[in-house]
Length: 368
Image (tube, rainbow, N blue to C red):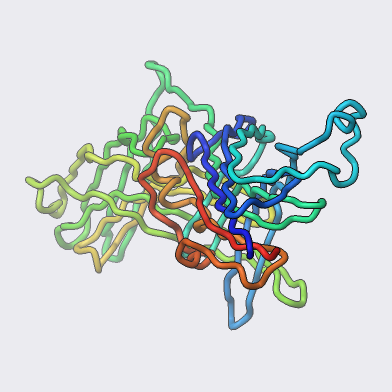
């Protein structure tokens, strides 16, 4: 009879900082009893980008981290005293139920988790639990998690002057539109209120009924085709924004008007960069025109979005947007492995989870 092993992995939280300890637990249940001699944990991270230009496929994959550590080994007293861990253990544990805690220290300077469907770029991490018998892996279980290191925030002083960004757009017959944006700072955290003042001076021939403030995500990807030729692609993603106050319908000809929009940073991934692979930046954009389909002037201002460990919203966003696909258990020695869970989604599918802890469970049938 083929034994069936149920592997359950849980982590203490879904989002970690670099240089932080991952506290987890793996529960193993076998029916009937199965002999094993060790359990390993693998920390794995990969950055993956692919895009198409002029019918050519460009890809770029990079392993960020791949570290294997042993979290449990069944040793005899003689093996323990000799401190000799080389070779398979002479002692096999007949497992019916086994629960093991584990701790993994994340190294410094890990790039943050990242996912953007339109750019076809992912940066993802997972914990892989491997069960061994005679130094041969008999089954594997994966659990995704997210990394989002907090960045130091620039705290503007009370006396710090606002930055003023202004541009004049000239048209024939001495007509023009002046767009101005006054900012207290250019570094923000997700969901933070933008302290900005927008000004428009209309010297065009008609009223301006559309003044819109939004954020644009700019993602630059770099990949190589089958011949090794490198290519870069820029993907821009428009986010939602706000317009004129409800009581203000238009900016009339020769009118100068300014207002403070009620606008908060959306729950966006922080600015990030992996040299030679992907870079994500943000622009604060002010569009001015007669309507949303007739834009006459656009002012853009580079801004930076960072995260704080004390910001819960970015953690919720990472769980829902940046998780790796759901766990993909496998049995290296068997092509007939069956799973109690539904088949995993494709690699570009992101799961939604309201569970504060990450957990992966699967039942794996093993060959005797």
